[in-house]
Amino acid sequence: MTGGRAVARIVLVELGGPCAEAIAVARALRDAGAEVIHAGVLHTPAAVAATVEQEDPGLVGLVPAPGTGRALADAVAAAVPETRVAVLDAGDDVVDWVKDGAICATDPSSGGCR
Image (cartoon, rainbow, N blue to C red; front, side, top):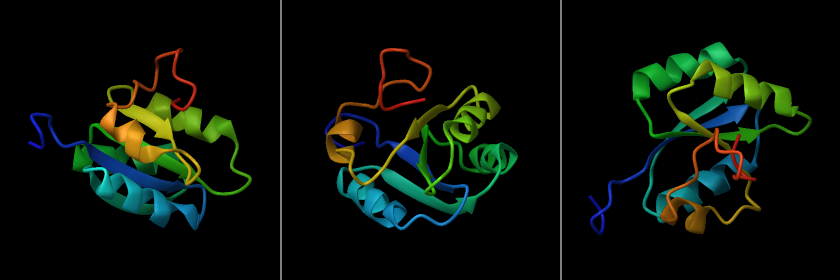
């Protein structure tokens, strides 16, 4: 526990290919107090689902490779319906995002989550 709140456990996935932003996002999440499991490059929703089953995170953070379409992120969200899924990039203010508790991936009011 940190400050009375549970520490966020986040599986960070480079979706569809290598993405240089993933390291910056992982560091920002870690510095914000999250426990980050950097899964590396995963190409399929099934691979992400297998990692989620092993790691039991509260959130899956996707850092899409350049040119990766939204459909792949949506397929990942469908493959892990019990886990929140968010698309992140280094331009997001992930520090505030983690501290605010990250809105559920399926919440339509969330612009940054899928």
